[in-house]
Image (cartoon, rainbow, N blue to C red; front, side, top):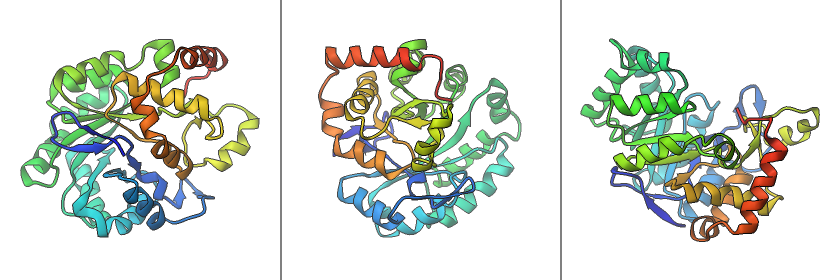
Length: 296
């Protein structure tokens, strides 16, 4: 495994993160078709050098399963969790339940989850907003570092103006960056402030849009968007190398064991080998195929 400094946190984290949704069995009304258990997946991850685990209350039964699986390893890993609540009162309830499910009394990183609009930013930082709780949790030692996740670059940049965060989880993606430069301004701001850069959506091809997607969706039911098939190895490695070249610190694969293992097994190639001219050309051609279908 490769390790990178996560901004100014002082954490040296695995270049691939274990996304807790991999541990979910029941999620959004479906039962995972994957063969294996959370205990098996987490043990495999630990054996392959993974030391950063990320989960959220909205990931079905992921907190319950992951919490049990991490008990033997808690002191040796970094555990990040989230709340999608925007008021301090609601987020405190979220936090207490999450601590119980994860069998921990602190989080290495605690994050505001899914910031998408300027209105959400204003609520979070307003009177009684979730940021009041975040500062309380930091003083109490429950949240050792504070971060957020976002799907809007404008909202993320506004968040950085209002607070000195430790990490930001954002969609960095070969398709969206090539077509709209999505993420360029944010990653520049994060590097200037020495804030940890966490990457999601790196292995996504496009949105689920067509009837013929149903078979793949049954295979990857915990992925909100259509991931690049693991069998399409050249394409998938190029997409991952693209975001590594952008400067991300760690990549969180889609929520299935197939893509997680693929990223782990190819981590050296992803982070050590630059994109070739042939790979760049392939990604340009692939963009034209999916240009009309953004991934969220």
